[in-house]
Image (cartoon, rainbow, N blue to C red; front, side, top):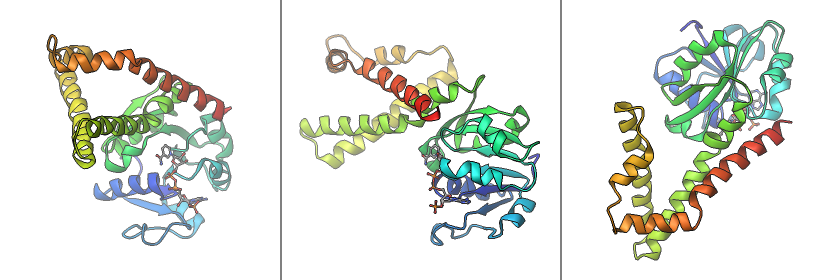
Length: 259
Ligand SMILES: NC(=O)c1ccc[n+]([C@@H]2O[C@H](COP(=O)([O-])OP(=O)(O)OC[C@H]3O[C@@H](n4cnc5c(N)ncnc54)[C@H](OP(=O)(O)O)[C@@H]3O)[C@@H](O)[C@H]2O)c1
């Protein structure tokens, strides 16, 4: 790694998960979060003095709430390399708030980063991209974006997407309950079905990057069988349209909130 010590400002859900991942890989990391519940801070090295923290950390990961970002950056005493995961705060705001000469990258992560299965998009100073990938790729799929506007699309898809998937799992389970399974049986089957479907597609894509989800779907859809009967209901109830609209609306909402 180009940077010797990674500093994490804000060690809550997001910052804490990144901290634990770096710690488990023996990467030198230090946190700054005067407000963190001591129980959650167990095993973390936290610097309590902001000036000392800045002297020690040569790359900073900013994981405070969006409302705290500008104030935090304005209080930096010298230019820094900064990776920000704050939703809705663009590189213009990051650069203008941080001391001149700082390098900034904006990252849009999602919640499954907490279990090492995140998906994120990033945009900013290319000089930081290698370090970003070293830090995040063990816990997240990382997509380099060609322009900053696409951060809104990432927000609408993978940022908000875990909620859509959870809603889908819940509906799948309710369908199982309506068909006679207990809720816990149905929930477990639903979770495994989503994990299995996603892993199957991922493995096929590794073998053949041109694999289309429809090709796999057709393999499990026999003529006149149960799956086509179920799929017909999804089409009738505009399931594909609902998902596409959800991503587009969440993308628009991300733009509205950023403006
Ligand atoms: N969680 C997600 O799924 C998710 C997804 C995408 C992006 N993000 C972004 O990630 C960032 C962090 O979210 P989170 O869910 O991890 O929030 P969080 O759990 O509230 O963590 C933020 C931590 O930073 C502390 N803090 C506040 N001001 C600080 C300061 N000036 N210096 C140091 N620490 C400070 C907070 O203390 P207090 O609680 O006292 O404020 C809290 O412990 C946000 O900007 C969010 O937009 C989160």
